[in-house]
Image (cartoon, rainbow, N blue to C red; front, side):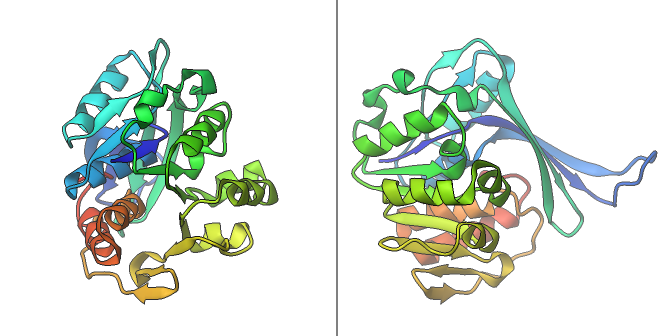
Length: 263
């Protein structure tokens, strides 16, 4: 059972057919569905044949109900407190070349508190996967660190070089070293900002169209027409956790060839 802890958001994907221009219309293809890095990984784990559970805080609003129902359709066990408030939304603008820009409103997700974490949500957990987003904000970081204490094995995706910058790169590296994850997923910007790979873990470097390096062993990307790169790193992480490097690269190729971050 792979458990992820973090955000369950509503994803709004806007795939532009032509560049945006101020004061002008632009044709686009849109998609609405569940999102958030932790939720994405859980969905891909379920799609790839693994057992998955998501833990996170969401609001009792239409966006929260829609996102939770969408995630459950991938066979994911959805856990975590449901409260009054606002479920977050991510708007992703995908350019004609497949590159993306995101505007993120995390809503109540980062407000998950230590005292709200039910140890039962970690029952049967063989592996806990934490996005960096769950370690870079409070109070969700207190819940994430406690969950890591209850899990037999932990992996971390560094998530965002800009979020690390705002938190403090040295402070974040110290937190990672104390956490001692078995696996760390990073892209080149994230690796650079924390000062290089951590020792004592499997370091997985995501290099986009150039593929990925798994513990120093390079794997080329599987050729695919890049419609949307949103969630490709999450698919890669899920694939690796379920079946290793080959499944990781295959999942990433599947993800970029479709619109949206989930299968």
